[in-house]
Amino acid sequence: QLEIKRNEVDDKWDTQIANMKAKAKTDAQKVAIDTYATTVEALVSDRRAEVNTAVGVFSTGASGLRDNMESEYTTMIETHRADVAGAFDKATAACGDGTSSATIAAELRTNLSAAREEFRTARLQFTQRADFAEIRKVRVAASTAAREEFRQGLQEANRVLLAALGTRN
Image (tube, rainbow, N blue to C red; front, side, top):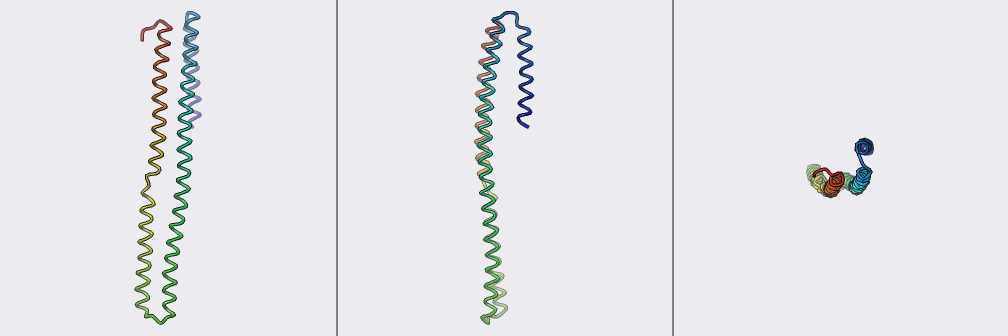
């Protein structure tokens, strides 16, 4: 998707530069336009590289976080299943000891409730993650810095071109 948009912008840029060259009256103006085009293309290339790096770092970080979360979630579920199975095993063992059924049922309810509460607590901690927000902030900051650097470079390139063409800034 991004590459398609970039290709469209590149095509539009090539058309604009060709139109500027067609309007140029002197060789000096054509050289100034060529210099401008080279400068802007370098700025665009740098910005794209910085944005690609930021997106790549974000993707790698997000993938790692997803894998971590999946592992934690699986562990959380397995722990809960083991706690529930343990509660039933304990109740089954108590049945063979001659413990009253009312006591066994009460202990089972208590153990199942504790397992359920432990699972609920683990799940709440699991969903309250700031990790994704943090790597998103890093990506946005890097992209914003690249955009600002590009904007400043473009302003300077425009100023140089206008001065070379003899047009007021």
